[in-house]
Length: 135
Image 1 (tube, one colour):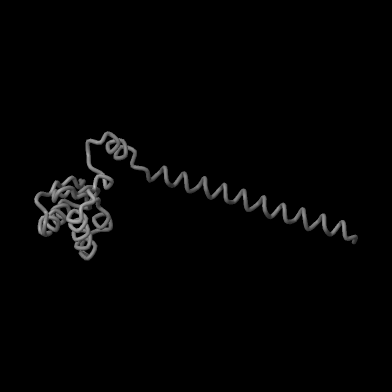
Image 2: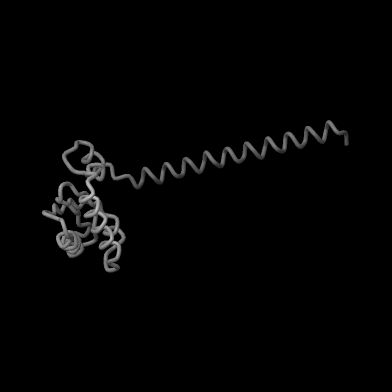
């Protein structure tokens, strides 16, 4: 075989490998986008766009509010009786007023999270906006 023919074969083989990788990457991206859209909470996202409810972006940057939020989060995460959903609730503190948001597994879990927040030093009020997933 000539050098030119070998060079052409290697070039074509390399191009084919690169194109196959590109197609696979596009397929993986399409699969991830489909999975993300299936998990999207459109109704909740729409509700949060109108600024009528607090989101984590509304957390004040005062040292006291940051410390309250951190203390509540630590207590929640340490409590092994709580579900994964409960461990991932939104905790927003503004001037000592704590707002709890997100899905939980039961009414009992909702009340447990409220109690944890109320018992945290510096909390003046708790707005419990947690959503019970169970009927």
